[in-house]
Length: 331
Image (cartoon, rainbow, N blue to C red; front, side, top):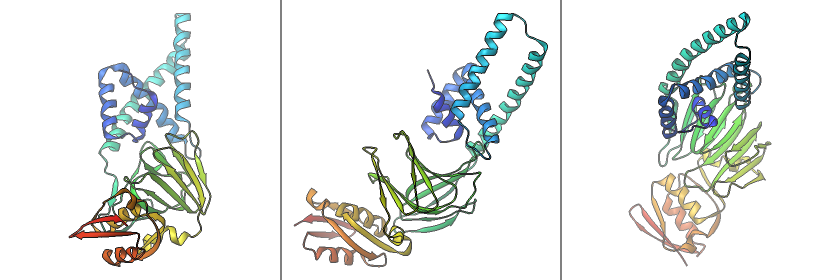
């Protein structure tokens, strides 16, 4: 059973899902060699992270250099048959460091695995504002979840997001703030931006108000850096993206102020939004109804039936209601 080094690095960084973590831990338990390999990677990561107060370290490169150096020492000792006194002393020191750091590995890993992240979640029709332990402020839209963790192994502040949130990140040049969602990462130092990454949506949308953000995804070769008043729309299916200008910041965060703003959205997109805010279930009687587009603005305090009645005045669709179940048909 082979385990790729990048998977082990992600395990130590705490970015693997629970199922992948179990696979790594099973692999480690198979042999002493596997455990030693994980320890070696940890040694490099631990030292590099302590040195990364000002600069990001390439962990993968450092580990490859570590293996090359280790290989050269092994070949050298085989050729001579004897080991000079200074190398013996160095070897003893190295062993001591590995033992100490192995102990630290056990302790820190337990702290990482057992410490509970700072978690906040909103339900149907709910919105929330929260201040994170680092001083950053986050607004969560309906049906959203945020898990925040400051890792012991990394200088990064990590936030796992599902749904939509607006971030006002506390600036700290030594500890980048990273928002993660299904293979994507948005990295900042201190800035204001909105992220929409609902599980049911085909896109991840990042809108930057102030500062700078860097968007990366496992299916993109290069990262994308945004400037203020730019919006990135990443297609989760095709892995293509577009960068657009933001015409109105107020429109981007209208939901914070209790507004439902639709800019040429399909009726299907509007329906998904209404479901989250009004706790109803909306279905479509035919495919044509899904693709009807609207530009409209409503207050969340408005009744959903008022909203549907106003949209119906366009004479493009009709609907039927049965308690909290709604079916929409095209005309």
